[in-house]
Length: 288
Image (tube, rainbow, N blue to C red; front, side, top):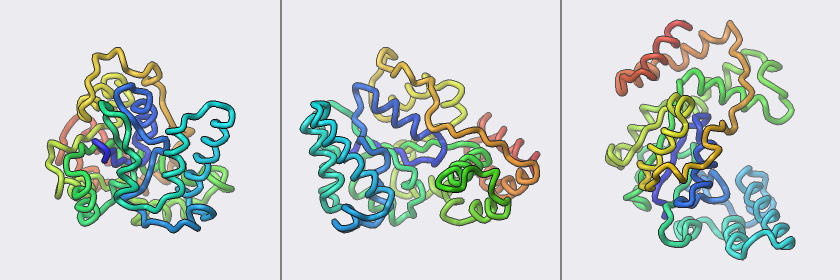
C-alpha cells in the first residue's frame, strides 16, 4: 500500500506536487495522478473497456499509449504490465495494493483531491488499509480556490470560458454541495483526524507553495519521509502546473463568493491563526 496520500485540495497545487514527486529519484508515483479507489464505486469490465467515465477513458488511453511506445521500443515490460493491471483488472484491495508494488527503497504515494471529501466512514475504510500512511492536505484561500475551480469547469467542453456563462449559472455551480465540499477544509480535516493522529496529517498552504516552492517541496519531502539534501530537488520545481488562465472575478460576483466561504474562512483562522489565514479572512470580509 502507498506510504502517503495527498487528499487535495482541488485547485491547490496537487498537479505541481505530483509532477515534482514523480521526478524525484526517491519517490514512486503512479502514472495516473488520481486513481480514485477510495471515493468511486468499482466498475465492471465492460465499463472499463467502453464506458464513458473519465477514469476508464484515462486508463484505456494509458494502455494504448504504453503499447504504442513498446512497439517503438520506448516502454518497458513493467510499464505495460502496470497499465494493463490498472485498465483491465477488477477493482479490489488486492488490485489497489498491486499498483504500488515497486522496487524496495522508494516511498510511494497517491494524489487524489476527491479523498478530502470522504466522510468519517470512508476515512475509516482508508485507515483499515493504510493505518500508517502520512496524509498531505494542500489548502488555498477559499475564495481563490472556489473561483479557480469554477473557471476550470466552465473552460471545458463547449462552454469556452466562464465569461460566456451567466452569473446565475456560475452561482448555482458554486453552491452545489458536491462542489462546495472541496473548500470545507476544517470539516474534511475533522473526518481524517477522526482516524489518523494529527501528527500524521500535514497541512501545506498554497501561499507557501507559490512564494517558496523549493523550500515548501523540501518540507513535503520531510513530511513523507524522503531524505533530501536539496541536490535532488527537481529543476522545474519553481514552475507552476495546471495554473489556469487567471480569469478575473467579475465585480458583482466577489460578494457571492465571499458569502459562500466566509464561515469556513473564519473557522480556518480560528484553527491556524497564521499570516495566511488572517490575510484570507481580511480580504474575504472586504468583499462582503
